[in-house]
Image (tube, rainbow, N blue to C red):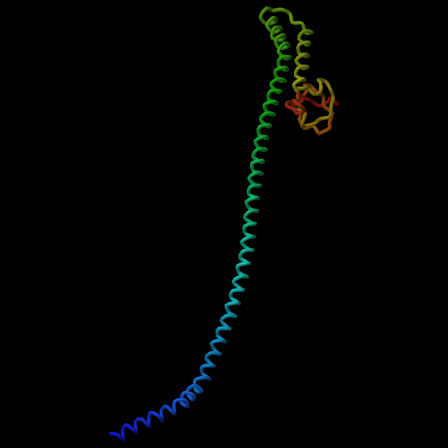
Amino acid sequence: MMHSAEDSGSSTQASRSCKPGVWRRVANACWRPLCWCVRQLVHTLRALWLFMRRQLSMLRAAIREFAEQRHKILKLQADVRARELDLDEARQTIEGLKADIVRERKDEQTHLTAAADNSLEKALTELALPLTQLATQIYLTEAEGRALNPKDVFAVVKRLIKNAQAIGLCLEGSAGEVVAFDQNRHDVIGIDSTIKAGAHVTVRMPAASFRGKVIRKAAVEPCAS
């Protein structure tokens, strides 16, 4: 028993004397991998930091570009709204001008109609007297058997012609006048109606025109050769 206790004590002393060397070897064995791991971690963290900086810089650039584009879009929208307002104002102006033109045309048409009515009324008023005189001459001749004075009839007819000219109804030419044939203004009397343009013809009934337009052609016949 005494011997075993001594053996155990000696072994304990031996193990204590061996611990510093063992720990030193363990530390030497683990130090290099630990340093490598630390270096790798630092390298990774540095790479991650650079990556994050690049991403942050790109994000800032994207935000700036987005802000610029947004500003441009807002400016364009403001310009579009301004143009729309200008177009609305222009449309309103055009509609107002159209309304003014329509109103002016109506006023002008009303004025022209009134002026034409006044002119016609004046002309008919001038025609009324010779017409009534002519009607009276016809009544006195047919109903009472009075002799008709040609001078009175001619005076009434001349007054009718003069008043008709005032409203644009005119007689062109006179009976017995020799003129050059014009198929647009002359109608040939008789069987032979094949007269060449420019040939001399005698007017038997004058033409009638209204405001320069022939409304009844003159009756003509070839001149006697």
